[in-house]
Amino acid sequence: MENPTFKPPFEAIVDDDDARRALRKSVKMRAHLRDRGQTRFEIDVTDLSLSGFRAETSFTLWPGTVVWLTLPGLAGLEAVVAWRDKFKYGCAFAKPLHPAVLDHIIALSNR
Image 1 (cartoon, rainbow, N blue to C red):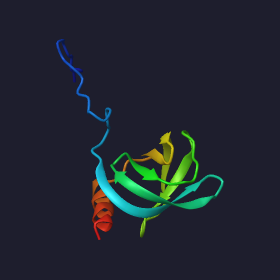
Image 2 (image 1 turned 135 degrees about the horizontal axis):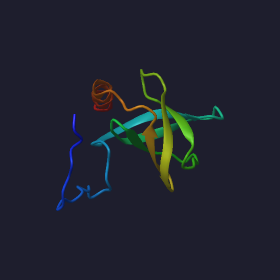
Image 3 (image 1 turned 90 degrees about the vertical axis):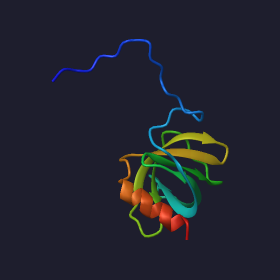
């Protein structure tokens, strides 16, 4: 099978909010986050996608920190802190969520 070739002109498609790997869904739910030091604390998850989530917490985390997100009724999901802006954090899942799991979590957040 031959590899496809691309010839100019072509432009990259860039989202207004940075290039994203997956569509984000707005949610509002309490969850727990745990770091490698076993510190467990509450967070507010504000959006979610197949590849990660955004959360708010007063607990300090640094980009590169490995964490586990625990949502009600689900096993811990491994992620890494990708960015930090004061009390807001963006985290990328170690393994993308299955679309059915994402739909289930979003349904839980709408209750």
